[in-house]
Length: 277
Image (cartoon, rainbow, N blue to C red; front, side, top):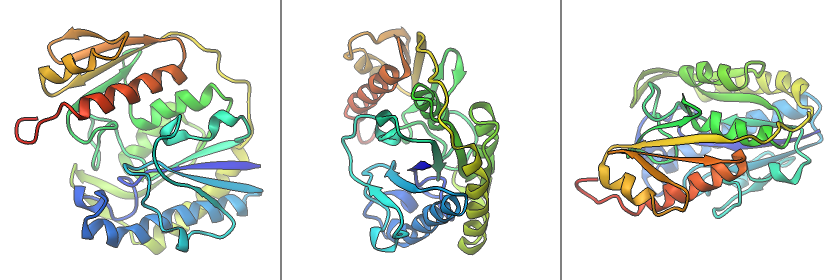
């Protein structure tokens, strides 16, 4: 049994404020061991549940946040950026029996601690076939094309609610309860580690590759907080402006859909100006 852990940071234990997860900030440095603790708990739980191999893919910003010197020795760490599938890199090799979304969060335009989709603030909504999409939903559609089930989700309590739409059978662990976008009632790392480890052991039972989801056209729409960002997004071939702040494109597979989305967000992030967005 081989498990892939996609590790994001906004949904980690104790993280409630942008500085908590912005690389280089003192708050980020302080919370890196806590983030690593969440991931270690998932690793331990999967091995408790019978896993033979666990690979951790860093999925947050620079993708260089976890402390490898504190990581469970039984796991391997995929760290660094510029990966073909970004947050779910590795699933395309076809040997992943289950994937865990650790430290995930809610979608842009929805309630949730540090809720966003890929870009921190300038995207106000992402929709797949008309449904508001979190990073969890987007990534679940990608991994389904490789026959890999989502077997664990951790984040705030609203992230656990969001996970019910894309991974209803997977155990979900709330490490904090949403109060506002920048505030939460947080459990201690010792408590969340115990909860995550137990849930991962249960989730291991679900780790079994299934028939890949058949590819089909997906209509992906992205809404921004400024008109010029929508215009910038249309520089990506196939992306069309459908409103003052909205663009859309159709992808024949979610593999192509997520790669187009990565290109779009990379381009748009470079069009955001310091003071007026």
